[in-house]
Image 1 (cartoon, rainbow, N blue to C red):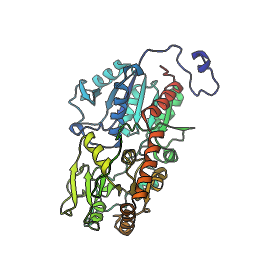
Image 2 (tube, rainbow, N blue to C red):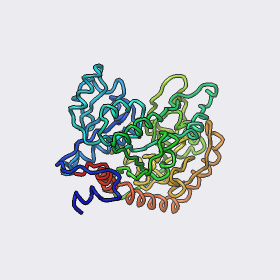
Image 3 (spheres, helix red, strand yellow):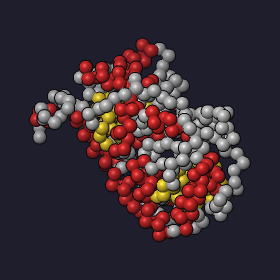
Image 4 (tube, rainbow, N blue to C red):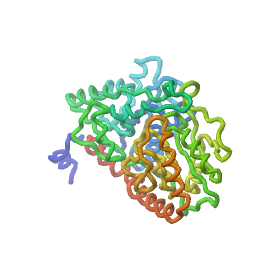
Length: 405
């Protein structure tokens, strides 16, 4: 099919440009960039890093990535910040100077890592630049209500830090204005179940929400599990992850090593302090990718105690390392397929401890079950969330918004 034929095809929702460019420039809009020197280390930042790695590793793909931040305190205020070998343009004191720099970049496309209200000024000053919203962690009112039940043991009368809801409905104004301006704006998610959360989270009901897989590029090779049983927790040690449940679970398995991978973002009252831990619990903090790969590959199980998750990247990385999951959340039925789902437990989650104990006991005692779940999980990740799967979906989205390479 020629470019002219494609642009006039009845199933194409937006007209294509008439000429192809050798390269396209994509502004990746996010509130974190997976670098401790400039902020949080979370799933949004992980996604930005993976996109940058994907395209910078192969210039022949024809995509140039620039990070765009609207968060205060990110970067040093100049346009020469390099994060993951990718230029970062931070929020600047001079608003006019900042806008002029954005305009001068000549972006062909904006890839929005989920959405935060601080992104809107960027969308407004580039009113005709197509947008792909990569929906990572949508939280409609029912999810916000569940999350707000979280309480830290011993701090029951204190509202934990990091739970405050973020009103993402201003995206509806951007979406409606884009329709009037004929600016393409598409929504994609890494998991089908997240599509149902889009209207309640953003106040938008798009005609379609497509899949844009995660880039799970770790390669563990032949997996060898540790001789001594170990289980891992891979997440920030913040209240909505409820790390105290992992520490309490360790008290019931004194002969098993429990390893925290991650560190708190919040401190002080309303945060969880990892003190007085059992002797079989180890705090590793944030570690390098090679060390993380080794620990995930040797672990017997990944334990997740969050009150809420999207499609957790930690689930996919663990499964790629043939490590089954024990969790009280079950996004896209991943846990019930490749691990043990212990049921939903709101609040502090402590009422669910007997189920956690039961589930972990089963995983630790049944090597055949662990092995089967791990291998099936690895195959699922390989088949659905690889770099090639991401690129195929991304290329299709580019074509649909008129930015075909």
